[in-house]
Image (cartoon, rainbow, N blue to C red; front, side, top):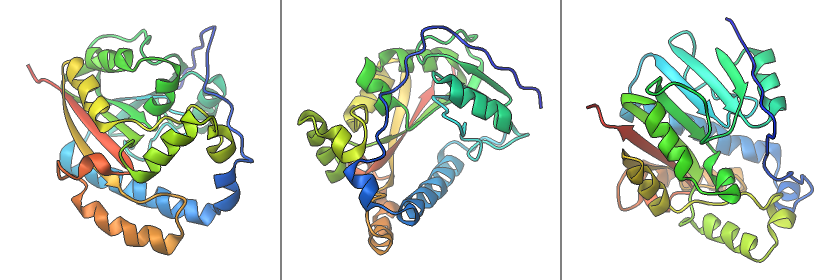
Length: 251
């Protein structure tokens, strides 16, 4: 596998994350693992149902150090990873988690039009929302997608009780003390679908899970029973973790 890394000046990252926050002190790694394993399984099942691609070109924007290869495995999928943090890109390159990786900013990527089947924003847009408007991200995805391709965004939802509490903590200036960073902005499901439609994409919304990673494992598993209704239009907007699938018209 051939890897290359590119960089650019003036990279602006997210706010620093403080690990001594209240929620991290109260939550064990085992509790978090229950949530993350469930989330990964729900993502894979949803993609198999609603985006049944067996191969293609994927752009993971804000990839972090993982690049989400588990969702689009090699060699069927060619994965391009981009992140504003050079350290994250170095980690992706060193681990061989993508076919191409470079430093760049969402909304300002120098990539050819119609060059991807999937543009993935996984737990990224809610951080970008702290720094500025989301419209450039959606417009860029629409430009980069091939006909029939899809933007996939996985984000925390504002209309879930946890999203409401998180938003309140942000407004009161307690975000860093409670959950580690002020740039963790739960997103309105109405905003997600409206941004996609404004960019010329056709959106559909799903709730991946109604549970919360901070709940005790037994309670998480109990709440996860609600996940079976996550694709119903009336219930999906109230999920804790939302999945937006926004397709580019095939014409």
